[in-house]
Image (cartoon, rainbow, N blue to C red; front, side):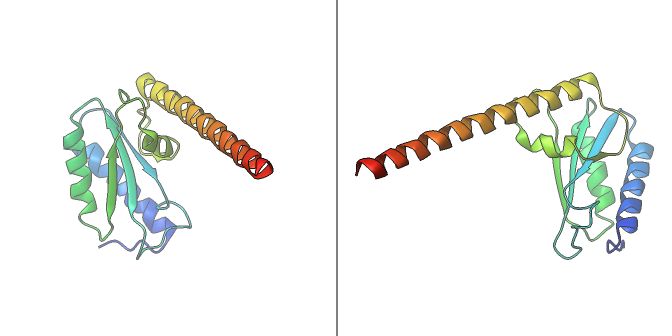
Amino acid sequence: MYNFESLTNRRKFIENLGLFVNANFDTDYNVFVFGSFLTDDFRPEKSDLDLAIYTKGDMMDLDMLIQEFVATSNIKLDLIWIHPEFNNNYIDLAPLQGYYLTNYYPEELQKHFTKLIFSLQREIEYRTNNYLLLKNALERSMTDG
């Protein structure tokens, strides 16, 4: 059983996860660690381990290996699959900026990351414009009333 009280222990757990996957998965892959697990914000009783995985191999095999390893601990796992063919999977943005276990970051994944950033930028612009329209309409109604 792992003790996740210290950042050093959590880093060691991620290192061991990487060693386990490397020994049991023979296709290029990457596992992205995001969220609080590798930060001082992590709370052992409340926080979970957020992982995202990417491979051109069998995603289910990689998923099952990770779940097998994590099952040896007392941590809850939140695992997502990264699919570059999806256009609006905003959840992929956080892990792609996080810590990753391997250097497997192919051009397809880099393009996906860039596409997500531009999609998020368009979403922010859209929401900002809608907010300004609503604000202006409310201000006009208050002065007209």
